Length: 502
Image 1: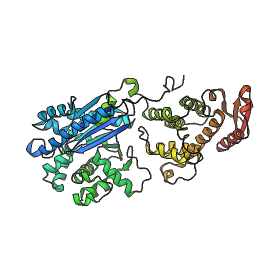
Image 2: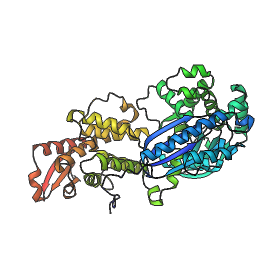
Image 3: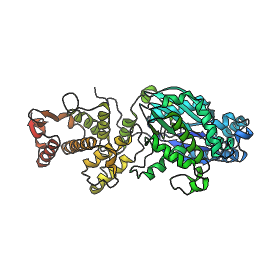
Image 4: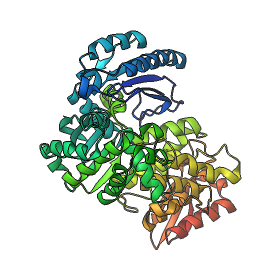
C-alpha cells in the first residue's frame, strides 16, 4: 500500500476559521483557510492597543488601550462575518489575566466580539505556543520562547513533544514599567529572573525557537544585514553569536534610532530595545547553539490542538504540497503516481536516501506541475518563486530551496538570479538535477495524465544501464524526444539508457 492511499484529489474546500488574540500589546485577528494541518492565513490584522501598558504599576489595564481594543474587536466581529468564518476562537493572555479590571474588560470584549474569550493561564499560553512550534517545526528539540508584551513563556520541547515550562513577567511593556524606561535597570530585572530559572540550563547546546513579533523583526534585520536571499522568516536560523550581535545592537538603541531602521516595524520602536535585551540575556544565560524563528505560535497551536489525531500526526510539508497539487496541477492523481514511479530508482535496490530526502522527493513530485499554466518561457521562474516563497511549514530553508530548484530545473531554468544556490550544498543541487531529469522523462511519457506511469518501468540495470520498460501496447510512445530524455537522465546517473518493450 502506498503512503498516499486514501488521499482525496478534489481541490481543498475553503472553510475559513478565525482566531482573535488579545495580548498585552496588540489585538489581532487572523482568518485561516480552514482547520488544516498547515493552515494558511487569508486575512491578518493587528492593532497595537497597549492594553498592558502601566499594569505593572497601577495593576489595571490601560484605559486608552481598552477603548482601542473594544473598537478593534467590534471591527473584527464584522470582518469575520464578512469573510465567512465558520468559527471564531478568541484568547486573552498576560495583561487580561493579571489586571484587577481584567474580568470587567473581558465581559466588554465578549460583547464586542460576540464570542466567548478564553483567558489563558501562563501554563496554557506556554502550551499553545509550544504546540505551534511543534506543528510548524516537526522534530523540534530545544526551548520554545514566546515573548508577548507582558510575559515570556518558555517550554521545553524534545522529539516534537512538550515537557515542562515556565512563565516569566518580563515582556517588553512590563519591563518598561518596572524599569522606569531604563534599559540598565531592565537588564538587572531580566538577569534576576533568568538566574532563578533552571529551565534555561537545559537549553545549552540545543536550539532556541523564537516566537513573537519582536523577535521576528530582529530576524528581519539580521536577514538584511547578511544579504540573505530568501525573505521567509519561518525556520530562519541564526547562530547564538549572530543573534546576540543583533540583539545587543538593538538593545543599545533609542526608540528614535529604531524608527529609522526599515526592517523594524515603527510601531515596535518603543518596545524593541527591551525585547532585544530579553533575547540577549537569555542567550547569555543559556548558551544554545542556534536561534530559529517560528511564525507558528499560540494561534496556530490552538488550532493544532483542535485537529483530530490523524490530521495532527500527518506531515505538515506533504499536506501543504498536496494542497498545492490539488489546486494547481493538471492531474493531482498523476503527481501521486510520480511519487511511486520515482520509488523505482530509490530505496533498497537503487540510490540510497535518508527518510528526510525521501520526504523531500515526494514533496517535489507533488509540486512538479504547478507552473503549467504560465507561459512556457516563464514556467521555471514562476515555479521557483511560488515554491521558495510559499507559506510552507515543516521544512527548513535548504529543504525549501531544494524543492524550488528541482521544479525550476524541471522547466529547464538555468540562471538563479535570487542567489538561492548558496543555501544548499553540491549534493542537494545534484539531487535536484537528477529528480528534474526524471520529471522531464515522466511528463513526456504520460502527458501529465494519470494511469500511464504505473504501466511504465524504470530500473537500474546491470553494466551501468538505466532501463525504461514499456508494455507492447505502449510501444508507440517511443520517439526521438523520449530517447533524448532517457539518455539525459541516464547520463545524470553515470549510466546508459536502454529501452525494453515487454
